[in-house]
Amino acid sequence: MRKVLVTLFVLMPIVAASAAATAPPKQLEPLVFLIGEWGGAGSGNPGQGAGVATFVRSLQDRVIIRTSYAEYPATGTSPASRHDDLMIIYVAEDGKVRADYYDNEGHVIRYVVTVNGPGDVSFVSEVSSNAPRYRLSYKSAPGDIVKGRFEVAPPGKPDAFTEYLAWDSKKRR
Image (cartoon, rainbow, N blue to C red; front, side):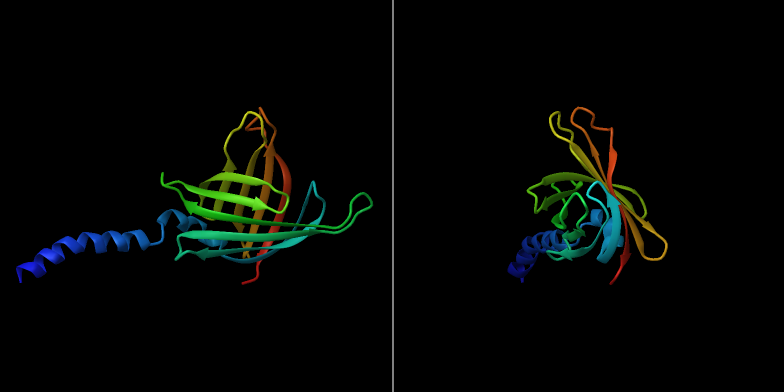
């Protein structure tokens, strides 16, 4: 009996720690309004476009993965094009929500995620003296709509954001 009690005493913290490690991080909860498939259209520097973004939980709810694409029709000055990207949203060791973004044009952006309020989040890249700074924002709106905005600040002016793209997305599922 003593061996059983000693074994339980030794194993209980390990089992408890294992259960805590597999629980979904609470820091991702404010982003659940994004989970689903979103069809949208918008405009900006690349022109008028339309696309789809899908946010799904993965790795036993420990990350959120966004895949998206936007298609831009040909204009008098540019051919038709398609933009594809992938973003992984996760809780870093410091407890902050971060996101890593990759696209078919070779861009890699490291974001820190800020919750501005219910249904309102911003992804902001770190300041660099010789590179642009980026801000990606999502805000929920009535009718299963999410309004998106992507802004860029020039090197040396990290808070001088100007809009590059804006769109409205409707939840499909």
